[in-house]
Image 1 (cartoon, helix red, strand yellow):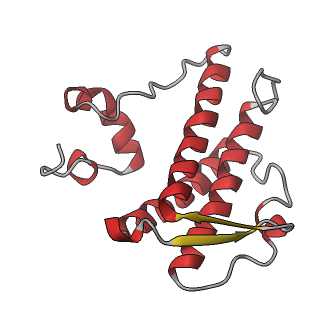
Image 2: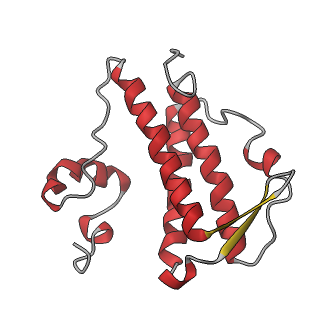
Length: 163
């Protein structure tokens, strides 16, 4: 493993961190949705192992499954649902935030650390992926391979009434 400059000392550590934090927040959101109490032992459930995945393939598969859970959760929401409060047991206190704030936090957290991975990759012999071609309509050809690998289509992500 090569040490890199970033909040975490390696690409593997950073990607594992993104995933375990995703698990933590997605679990809280799903629990609230089904009316379940906050996770009683989140530290053991999500953070007992700092880097649960050693290989890129295993980490990629786990992140993909986590992303699919988050996408399914978001698809089930309506605008009026975003203000509902989610409670998370933090051990010494309970965190209470709206779904909207927690979702914004998850996405911001992912972007922050994925940007760090992008910078770390820049110092390797591998070209980092393009990260900013997911929004403009004219850039569809530039993201086509990424969408294919993710199993997505333009119509699924950008329905005609939203583009």
